[in-house]
Length: 191
Image 1 (cartoon, rainbow, N blue to C red):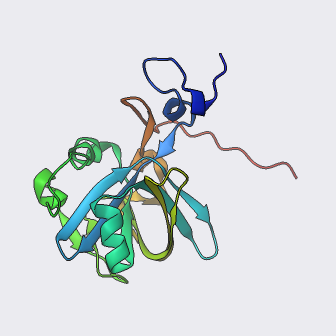
Image 2: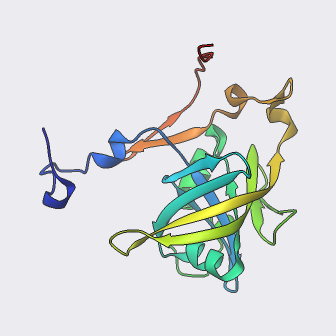
């Protein structure tokens, strides 16, 4: 099968989301004049080391509006135990609804920015807005943030490493499918 996205695929569901998989989930927390917000984004990733930078993309909802207003956001790692509450924060709720309260999620304050974070997340990246880019089509926006602070829960550190076998991060596959990362395979680069 071959298709041009502009012509459509003819399938009952778009294969694009499933082809680019797995994708990490950026559980984005923000604060604005209408209150705190928490929402998952599966178009999310780390893009640079020095300084550390992350990106996520989505349509113009509370998260991006709050970031435009405040200039900051936090990205919370979604581990397996947080899977269902993360899903609860994806509900379409009225503007200004606090998803932390809606889903019963404990929140803490960030350190370098004025923003809430998920208390039980294995790790949180505090970010300052670098840029918002309007993507082709005009309905989606790419948010670029510079990491200004990192929270790691001590129980997820083993011998000085962020232990992914303990974290068991959730990933988005496509359609309604998610996966938990449980098997790691070390691989050295060739010399």
